[in-house]
Image 1 (cartoon, one colour):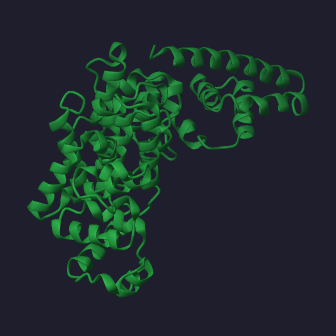
Image 2 (cartoon, helix red, strand yellow):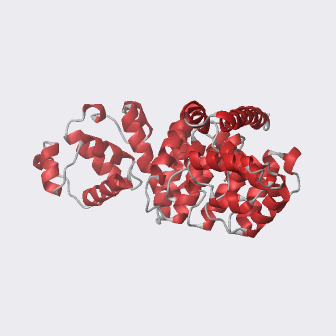
Image 3 (cartoon, rainbow, N blue to C red):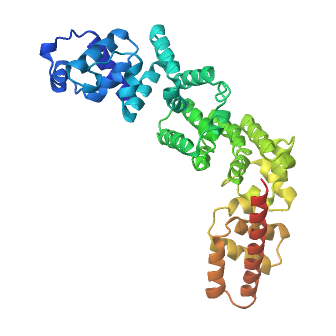
Length: 398
C-alpha cells in the first residue's frame, strides 16, 4: 500500500473520530464524502474497520451498517471481520494495520502487534513483504514479529536464510518491488544500500542485472554492501563484478570483495589479499575490469609481470575493432616486441565473440596475400582461445 494511501486513511480516521454520527444525516457514501469534503469509498471504510483505535473502529462499524453494507449488518467487530472480506480487502487491511508497527503511540503499536500475531496465518505473507519496505523501522519490526512467532523459519535479521525458503514466485514479487524502488534516481544512500543488500540476499535469477549497476555507486557504503552480499550469489557474473570491486579506490571495499571471492572460490583464492587475487587473474579476466585512462600503479606492475604493455592496453582499450586489427597486423609485420603484440591480441580477445564477424569481413573484403593469411591465423587462434576460456569460465563454480 502506497504511503499516500496510508496518509489519506489516517486523515479520514482522525476526522471520523471527532464526528458525531446521526443516522438521519447520512444515507449514502456521497453524503458522507460531502460532509468530510473528500471522496470516500466503501473500500476505505472497510480498511478502517481494523484501525487500532477502538473508538474509530466502532464508529466505522456503525457507519457501514447505516450505509447498508449488507455483509456487516448483523456482525460485531472482533474476529469475524476476516471471514466476510474478499482477498483484495484482506490485503489492503493487512497492509494498513502493519503500517502501525512504527507508531509512536505505544498502545497503538501494541494493538497492531497483538492483532497481527493473533491472525498470523493471514498476516504472514504481508509481514514478509514488509521485510523489504523502504521504511527501515517497519522492516525491522516486521522481522521481529516473524521471529517471535516462527523463529526457525525467520531468524532475526538473517534475510539470506529467510529469503532462501521463499518460492520463486514470491522472490519475483519482492524482486519487482526492489527494482521499482531503485528506479528512483533520488533515493537516499541508506535506502539504496538496503535495497542492494536485500536484492543480493534474495538471490533471485535477475538480481545481478540490477546489482551490477551499482559498481560505481557514488556512496562507498553502497559499494561495500554490494561487495559483501555478492558472496550469496554463486555465479560467474557475481565473480566478475567482484573482480571489478578489487580495483575500488577504498581499501575496505577491496577487502570485502576479496573475502567474497574467498567464499565463492575457496580452492582458488583461500586467504588471498586483493593484490594477490589480482595477481592470480588471467590476462583476459584482468583486461575486462580495466577502466579507460587508468592510472592505477598496481595494475601497471601486474601487467608488466604478466608480459603485457600497459600503455597499449590503456590507450587502445576503447578503440575501434578495425584499429585493433590494423595495429595487430602492423606489429606482426615488423616483428614487434612480443609484449606489444600480446597486448593487441588480448584487446581483440576481450571483444570476442562480436569482433569475429568484423575479422571475417576484413578477410573477405580488405586483406590479401600475407596480410590475409595473418588475419586468418588470428581468427583461428582467438576462436580456439575463446572456446577454452568459455569452457573454463562455466566450469569454475561447479
